[in-house]
Structure formats: C-alpha cells, structure tokens
Image 1: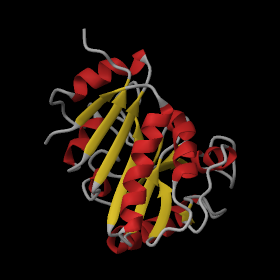
Image 2: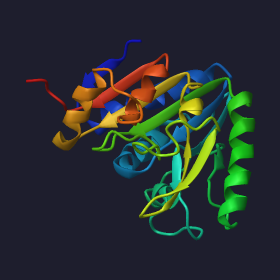
Image 3: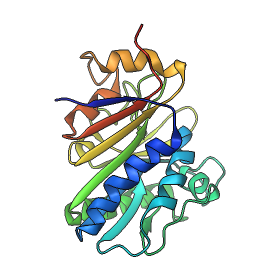
Length: 221
C-alpha cells in the first residue's frame, strides 16, 4: 500500500483536510461513520467539528476508536474530554461507548451498535493518534486487541479497563488519518515506514486502509 505523509503541525491544515473528506461524502448523500479518537487529537477534532457543513445531505454518525471504562462522564473518558472541548455537530448522531451500564453490558451493547453501523455506512473514516509505543486506538502492543477477530475488544490494563475497535474494523475503513505531532513520535514514524509485526507496532495495522494520510512534524535526517 501507499500512504501520504504530510509534514506539518498546523492544526488548521489538518482539520481542513479531515473536514473536507467528511463534507465531500456528506454532500454526495452518503451515510458517514466517523471514528473519533482521544488524547492529543481532541483539539484537532474539535476544530474539525466546527468545519462540518451544517446542512448536509447525507447522514453523519460519530463514535469512538476506543474508550477508558468507568463511571459515566469520568474525567479520563475520551468522550467526556471531547465534549468538554466543545465537540458537537448539529444533526449528527453520536454513539458514546459509556452509557452508565456495567462493564459486561457496556461491551455487549457497543459491539451490537458498531456491528450495525459499520455495515450501514457508505463511508467509514477513522482518526488516530500515535502512541510513543506504536499503539493506535486502544490497541496496545502485545495486547489481546492486536489479534482479536471481534469488532470490539475489551481487556484490562494497569491503568484502565479498555474498550477498543480492532484491526478487523480498521481493515473495513475507507479512509484513515493519523496524527503524530512532537519529536517523541518520530521514532514510530520511522518504524511505520518499515515493516514490523503488528504485535510489536500496532500502528502497522493502518497499512490495511486504502486511503491513509499521516500528519506529522517529523523531518527525516
């Protein structure tokens, strides 16, 4: 596969690009499923939301790539942090992972919703950050999520019970955008340009997406 590596740290440039992809599909009348992420990408996604056309022809459904389980609106929740940043789009349908149910019920419910949405959507687009260990979404190196055959994987980590989409979902995307800003991410950009086992470097999973754009301030040499 090929991917486009754009050398930038301009949030406006990144948000214009992603909003442009979403708006283009909505203008066609498509049902768009957008997987939003947390962490350092939240500020960018808040800007994207402001640039989505208000009167779109299609349907826009927004959910998460991953979530940290806990009480509804707990401060470490990716969804809570997105909403606190002002992330909102008129006429869009939102599917947060956390609904106040217990862990087992939460996982079962989101598995059903994601399965339904990935097959209903005409265009599936995912936004991803890049961890300094090479993880994307909640897919950590050598974790259960790396080789999961489910659409959603839930597992324990020392910090959180994680709920994440899997490589199976990522392989179904039409487009993916990865943001890797800061020199701490540069070693993983170098690894991404090589071939590594996904168990060691989960970001390699994104190479399965037909249209992949990486935004980074990385400069080789």
